[in-house]
Image 1 (spheres, rainbow, N blue to C red):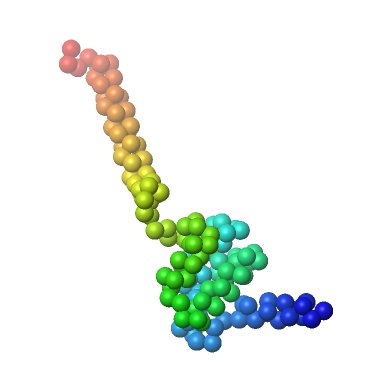
Image 2 (image 1 turned 180 degrees about the vertical axis):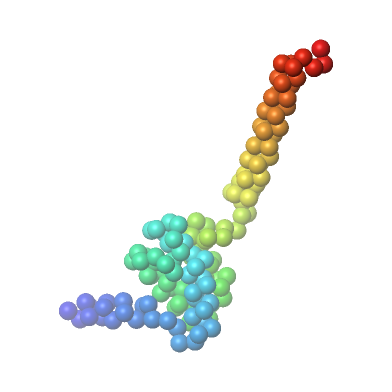
Amino acid sequence: MKTLFLSLIVALLAEAPLDDSAQEARAQNLMRELRCVACENEPVSQSSAAIAEDMRTRVRVMISEGASDQEVRDWFEDRYGEFVLFRPKGSGLDGVLLWGAPLLFLLAGGGVVAMLSRRRGKAAKDITGENV
């Protein structure tokens, strides 16, 4: 019975905002940058999953202990991987693919459009009899 009562008190206090409004603002910003590992595309700040509650509590504890924003991000990245960050660092091969692939797809699409346009123009010239 004591354990149940204690866990209920901890659960109620876990979602309590920090006393310092500047620290709470930092915590809220960080919670919007971190992805819920259960919901995947939902920030920790908006998720109702139990793990998101734990993550919010951990952010607040780290902020109240004096951790910097980067230290909080690094802690979550070490624990859950770069996936947990909504703004991945983009280093190494993964970063090249993450940031370079859209540009390559755009260039490839432009090349396909140009090639089809050129073929269509040549076919139109052949039909009208130009350059014969």
